Image (cartoon, rainbow, N blue to C red; front, side, top):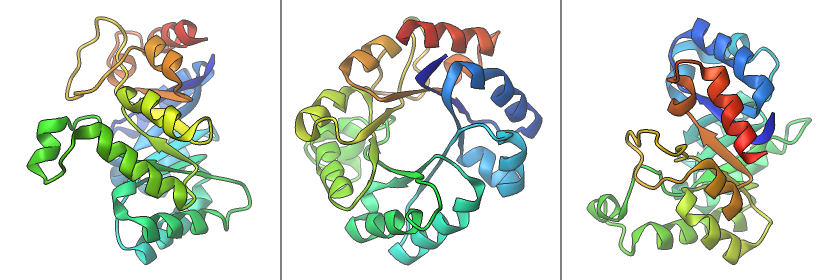
Length: 228
């Protein structure tokens, strides 16, 4: 088991999600349930699939501050250990999400998504963001952390940049992880599990290389062993 490994279960199938949670949890610090699953099954499906295991609920909330705060409060009864918002929502939205999370009786972590791992420099330029991913990640990270976010979601290629800028303070959760030889899929900025942990990731998020493997449990166990 590696506490650093988060297995991403992005499936709309309730039975499969539950089976993956049961099988993968012994090898992972957290299991991630995302937007596709949550929109299909909602809070009741979340509770059925989660089965009391530590869950990272990755919905990437992004709206006006009042709406995001209300959304966070609505999610708190589910007991997720981590929730995501988009850092691009701005200072007031981030602060509102953090304040809403602070009303819980435990301490759910608010993670701010900086730049999606599917976006490279050309894709950012298309939407009017100049300077490439690194500059945008650093800009958004500073806004997020200055307004109370517990951590950041970033690509592996920005780990060192963020550690240099902010030290050990932020939790860094890193998707875009592909074991050596795995297909890249729609990810543009990737690293192996070992490289990401060595660079300073607190958690690595691995989805399809686990869930689409012939034996997902064995795949998760192998990745966990590689970074233990």
